[in-house]
Image (cartoon, rainbow, N blue to C red; front, side, top):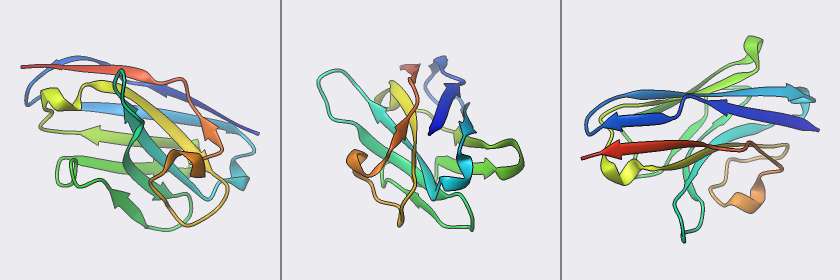
Amino acid sequence: QVQLAESGGGLVRHGDSLRHTCAASGRTVSMYAMAWFRQTPGKEREFVAGIRWIGDTTVYADSVKGRFTISRDNGENTMYLQMNALLPDDSAVYLCAATSRGPIYSFESWYNYWGQGTQVTVSS
């Protein structure tokens, strides 16, 4: 089992930056990749970005390319999401996820483990 815990949400203004952190614990050696999703009320979870646990492969949703950067620190079992140039449309609950299988896919059923999520609100 892998446990995930996010931190870093908050209320920011249009154009501001924010960094999310996802701390993993448990059987992290079993992880193939981690990802960030986001969800707004009444909508399905949307894939934001993914990263392999070993290696340099990253994947981004078109809506965040050039603004968001996903990274990780294997030594700290931690994944990050740096969000720059935030837009009101980026407002959502952000969740981190992990999968024990490859490759990196964007659909939520691919991921075995989920954090609780943190709210990001971007004011216009």
